[in-house]
Length: 516
Image (cartoon, rainbow, N blue to C red):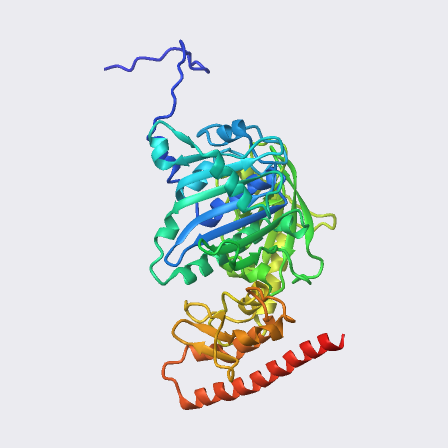
């Protein structure tokens, strides 16, 4: 058949009417399978806390003897009334965000939560409204997007439980039937929590480091047993993990500020940094594989939304391992940069790559000059010899998180063994410590605990100097196969000497009180 020529081209498709097509309940399957990593979803929720002007956030793991039960995120932000809760829990509703807000698409609360948990509850209170709550479940979404109203008495009781954080206003987000929690095998709770909290601490410390560094925000990660309310099993204050936090640059003259003319976005400033070679600082080594962490670090309203990567400009290579460039995304809307819904990456059009090639600083240095400087710093640093340190089993619960981080910075990890923890227990009075090799526990005699706390009640991470010294002395005892008499003899005389020192310290404390 001969081809029939079409009518004249129409630049707009003509329509004859319209109708409302609400989402099908099957959309719930897509909503609950967005692929949010656990720590990415928690960070998204804390973005909402920051937008609500919260100063304090607590990420609270609740466990019993056999399993991790629930996760709660508590903040002291503005809170929400009934109308605000309904809006926040409406699937597909997008609220208006100001230019300075961290929220963007309005989906993170539902998609991030229900990608990780079967049940999402939000309890909130404002200064002018009573405590109220809503619950959204995967089953409820499939049942016509049903949202449950939380019993007001329970909502108030939960607010009261966290009165140390929420005084006049605030919000609690509760996850139940968390998928990651349900995979924990019996006897593996300690290890799971140690690894999960470590990942979460690093992710929050990195992506929110600007807020944490200027004290706009305090984030604590807490573990508590459901049968022991108020008694913390673990308490970690999240500290900023600055990917540009070196003391001296790896190359004189850097960091440099190069201005890239990007068509469609205007002038974009590239803060080009060169890390010192072989740095052991956490901002260099503790944020993931080094090959993945070179390149661009994009910030949106001071929140890190991409940590490394070249965005198609070039491929990663070993000689550029010291090159990191901080870029604050333009506030004004543009067609060059777009952020993915999980706030994990930025897509840039070719206009950005063209702008980079024209980038220059006030001294005439180009982007190519910068890359050459970073490569030279890497080669020179890599030519230096370095002593290889023996891997160790990392410490865990009972030792201050700052000390645990210092160990990780200085020493490589031995395999993936359970961490060495510390516990105060009843021992015979002639021993200050003992070890449980099977469960990786250093046992401390609790009748001598007062020697380290001046008679006061000790906390979870008390006696940091004594615990650290014992960790360094005893770490290799937990990885031995056959237990030797020589090793036991060493433990015995260490015990005798340490016990003498503890008794001497106790005498000094209490003699000082009597003479005061």
